[in-house]
Every structure is written in C-alpha cells, then in structure tokens.
Image (cartoon, rainbow, N blue to C red; front, side):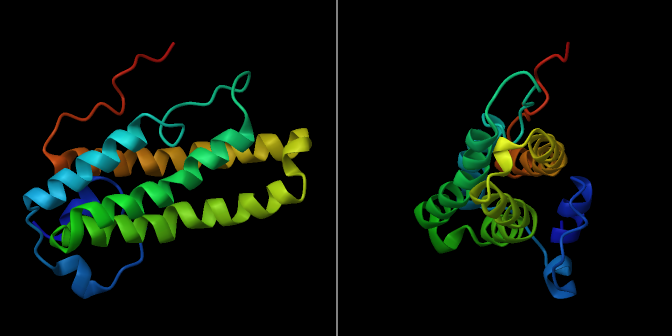
Length: 158
C-alpha cells in the first residue's frame, strides 16, 4: 500500500504533500500501530469527532479540546519514537494542514471576544462541524493503521 492509497481510502485527499510522499510504500510497523491506537482513542472520545449539540457545550472548551490534540500528538510522537515513521508523516501533516488553520483562526477570535457574540458562536460551531468531518476520516484511518475496529460512528443518532 502507498500513502496515496491510505489517504484516498479515508477521504483525506485534500492534504498537500509531495508526490514522492504519496507514492512511497507504507507498511505499518508495530510502532506505527501503537501510536495510531493511542491517538485514535484520544480523538474518538473528544469533541474533535463527537457532536456538540447547539443547546449544550461551551465553545471555548471545545476549542481547547481541539487545541489539545497538538500536545497529545507531540507526546505520542515522542513516546513511540523514530520507528513510527509512517504514523509521524501522517500525524504531522494532519496537525499542520487540518487542525492548525482552525485553531489559529479561533484562538485569535476568542481573544477578541468572539465567543460573546451569538453569530460568532454559530460560525465557530459550523466550522467545528466541518473540522469534525475531516477528523472522523482521520480517526478511521488511525483505526485502520492500528488494525482495530473503528468505533467512530458506533453511537446511534437520534
């Protein structure tokens, strides 16, 4: 399998990476699988992938939860080390291209008082929903890498 195959399978084709990265063969090693599992559990149990109904939750707490993925990913990368190269390549690209644009925008707006304005809170939730779609695809990819059953969509919608 190539990285291209993996990203295409899980709908993450919008990521901008070099052609040589996409065409490289990727066979996950135990370190990749363990790192993927660790991050998968963190993502699948947070607002990063779970619905935030309009009548519940706090925008600032949701932003913090998304932002915390940076430290969690960094710690996972450090813990599993250089042998988890395949996982590292994917995790770093997702942090920089999917999560960072969202947190960068909303940290600044939060500082400017955006979460005190109803229209801005609605905008945040709308953008969070779009981010969650991408991160659900990422969790599915991580479950695949970890060689575990994906539980991202295990709960029944009402």
